[in-house]
Length: 340
Image (cartoon, rainbow, N blue to C red; front, side, top):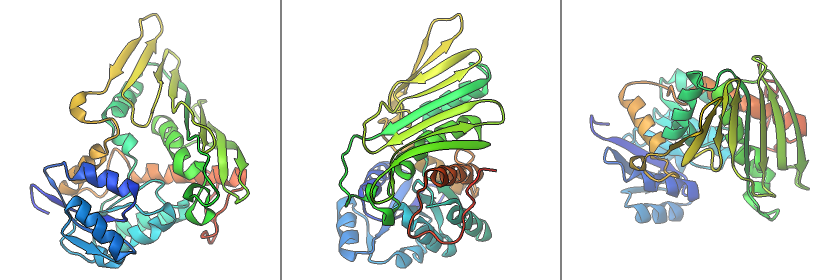
């Protein structure tokens, strides 16, 4: 790493890895120097697509590449613990896709490993880095709508997805909750912190993963969070934050919004829109910029996506899965299932 350039490695070659890399290479202070896949052919194809100098057919070779400052881990989430752990142990900083891991036990292991090796680690919760979401949070934190009473958020895809699809494959951590529900849960906890109690219901597939899940999160403040996710119905992907003095609505795409509307008691509605200078609403450049800022500053975690917050979300996801009866084949031991 130089004062001007942060060198990246990309671990995995799927769709999300391609989308992130496309945004990354447009940043003048980022350099993608290597990519790895379990298939050397896949890594070479990806490298040719994006003009990446080195392609590895195994993850460890990427982890050991000393020309890399930060590794972006974009494997299926069942492999996050292994892939990110290899990189942290080898001295690389890591940005790891969401959901951070399969369960909180694995998440705690990664956080402990990062702290042991004094490496930067962050979940790729791009929503938290989005400028308009940050503006919304600042308004809420400033008390513009008073004390928060409730948060509602949903994320659903119409499907239908066949049993062979990764979203229905238990071996890949399938189901609506971990792939989609992580967004509504993370949105609620961004504004309210960790819930003190969780109630949940789900419709399960024949394979044992959740087709759709709804949960009510209770907070010590008296606020409630209502979250829903689905892989059998396309929802509005809307969110609403209601306070004692007003409300903020995100009518669509709450995790990468182009606008939100502030309703304050006794005032006309105010619309806040994304700044075109911030790039396309689906850009992941903001999380990459935050990683590079933090790494240059010698920080080991981001104040925008703190590790304790990531662990808190994983505890909630574990609690929801425990309530609805979803458990994955790769899980061993007994993860903590109840939020602190």
